[in-house]
Length: 490
Ligand SMILES: [Zn+2]
Image (cartoon, rainbow, N blue to C red; front, top):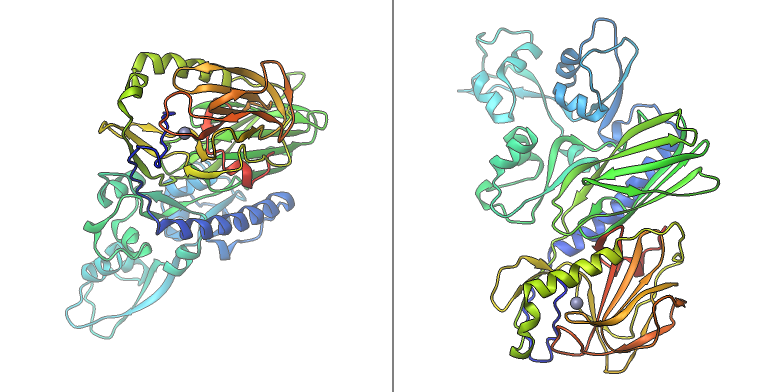
């Protein structure tokens, strides 16, 4: 990580972006914002009506019904119902409410010459015994030409329109069969929903909807002490920041576990409002992930916990091949780099109870972006096993470097790889770093305001040209700093 390039100055860089993906992401993001808003409305008003339009409906358990019988009549599986409703037990209570996927639609098939029940079942990706049962037949009863058979098929339109469906990003070397095994979905449904014409032509980064994996942002099972909850932006993305906000009816101490890491909550309003800044590390794969939220009353006699489900998507960062000039090759030394990285990590992983950011961050230099955060990087022909942990801006030598937000300077010194480097602590686990400066204008312990000049742009450290590398960490994880120029946290 953290290696630098300036393509105008002796560096050969080739960047491979999947340009086609970009507009799709933007529109998808907009769509998800609308969905998140809709979910908020659901959560705030406790709506319990059937949600036909969004691919889920509420079923009230009748006397004698079992999970298996409910699954069969809904055309789904026990595992799907358990997943959607976060059910641990197999037994149901009469009157219990269950969310069921509304993903089947009834159609009629007119029997053609040569048709068999098994052939029809294969054609629609159904089970022959199920078709027989639906038509009050035995499995081996004869069928005749022009006979109308009732079928329950996947509603493709509904699934395509269903924003709750999990999206899986195809990984290098992954096949459709592997995806089918991973999510336990019928092969035919995967083909149908994603309109795949040739299953052998799957490309890395393709985003597939996984039928049956409806995402539910915990509309049920929230403890009654939770008055409101909001997560944005959704879906979460590799290399980005998200903010979870929870309001409780009285003071609680809140903690969140996500992607194997514990996140601190920051309480305001007498401990009733809780902000959690979540960071999705680079190399996180697309999946439906869970957040475990725990609420502990201040007297520690009362504890609640619940699970939120959140879709994480891959970001499709590009690749850069960088050739360092001979006089900087010594800066690729692994031991030297590891020691410096560890020092930066320990400083930028602290969490202060105060917060000085808010109202948006300001770009750290009046220049243009020459290399994005997250690109996979190879040095001098080596493997693409590093990633760019910040955003590079170019400007003329000596141009001013600005503090992106108010904060306290916690490091200002010369480092081998990063050159003249400044780190500002903005509180709540948010830090910004400014590398390769020509000179520094502020010192450790100094309080700075947004837009204040903290140094001038240079080419110190592992670089081959003048530029500023700007880095942003949230709770010990480097994330895309440009997101913080566009969105206001918390
Ligand atoms: Zn950089």
